[in-house]
Length: 240
Image (cartoon, rainbow, N blue to C red; front, side):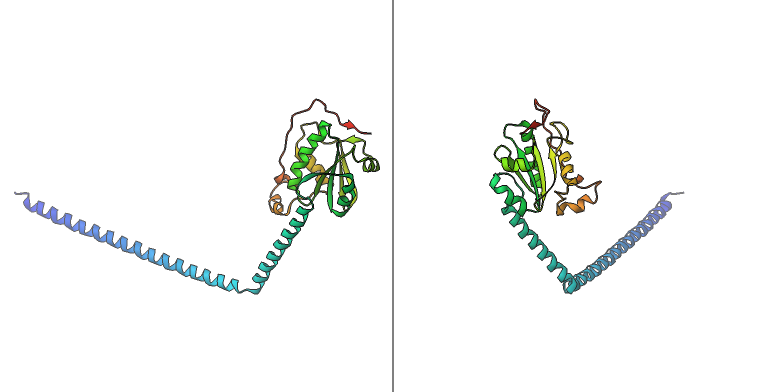
């Protein structure tokens, strides 16, 4: 018996299966296309709803008031910052005895460093205060030469240098004498920062308060340590 009839039937069967497979592929492609079209229509509808919602919000009087209040607040903050900048905030500067009383009485928060130019520990304190002055803009950081300011040095009973005297609205609220409670000459800035926080003469800047809420304590998120090599003397200097 010849194999030709079977070969013909096999060829016919193969063609039929190919046709079926092709038909299924076409159907799957049609289904995918239909799904894609429906998804796009749904997305377009969602976007249209969003546009409508945003248009409605733009006309909302309460939202407009919130926007205007925010603009006014930012403007007031900018004006206040400009005024404080003109008064020396954001910098750590040396003043004279004649300027001391006016600055202390007319500034809400002041940290004054009574120093001696030849004392090494006073220079270390300068470096820490320089860093803090940039960070805590609302507090005025100043330095006053103790030998050149005998009147206030005596009035404030300053006998050991360096000495920080902190003022709020013209009233002395606390002091840091020498490196007492700070450590040795290589103490980190955050130790001094904590002392000033405890006297409430510095506060966390407004822009950092949201971040602070996610941290583990006041000011921790914005403090950076500054380390210095030890000097030959670990003792504070008496000043009489």
